[in-house]
Length: 348
Image (cartoon, rainbow, N blue to C red; front, side, top):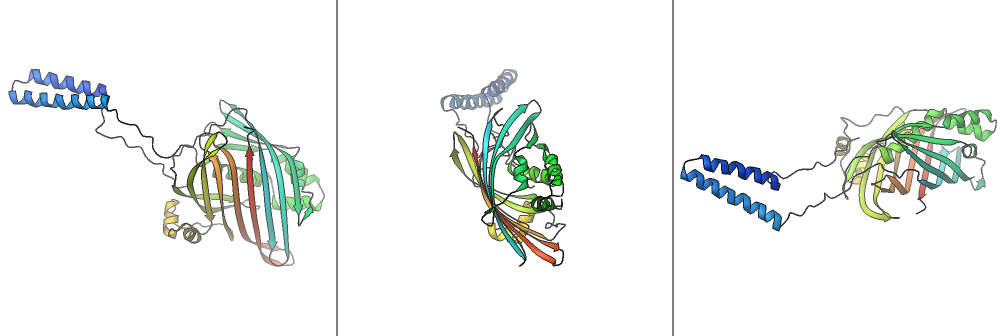
């Protein structure tokens, strides 16, 4: 990730009142010690200059201007409870052979409990309505997650340490004999795929930003990760722009828009930069090299309170293309298009 926060620069001609008094004391000592008349005159003149600076500071104090921008701090209230509502529209196609559209509406209860070492963020799915191709679909993952608690362990600096609970989901899926359970297991080989996905999402939304100080109008180029069902990580470029400050509830949020692509050349066209500048800004010596023939592209926007890192809304669109081996059909280009819309209710 290539992010260089702005550096503060202090003016070299600013002196506090105490500094000026020390300076005048040294000059007075020089005056009485020095026998030459010209030297005394020079020292006296210098005292007048220092005194005038002191008086001007007291009568006309310098206005202290805050640097434009804001600071990302991980400081959610202890014990806060909120609800995340998600609507996910997903279209999957395997070449010309098969295509399905799945629409899910999910409601998840979340609570944050702090400790001296950080906090635990506990997620519990409350309700799920899933339809495939317009018909009710018995999604086994959603059904099982209603009885399973997913817990994020986050350190006091806001960096995610671990995700627990998915092992129980995998165990229960393996015990099921339905076709939908087999399909779910084919997309998620083990719990580490789900853990990696959650940790990658935390970093892209929270972890990467903590302690940084952007300003409205800034654009940052980053390299982010996308975990594949095979367990492999795919890397892509992301261009984030800090658009404006927006009131959300009782907080002042920042609106962030983002475009991302595995191709530096394509992203460069979208954000009006050169491919070389994209790669350089990402801190890379050369273009990304991924382990699989996968293409990822998308865009979105997020409203987040930088003072707490609580998210208020988010929309993400993503298209993932990859070659897949299908028994009896050979190599097929698989395409997944999804749109995710999130809203957060903090009960304020």
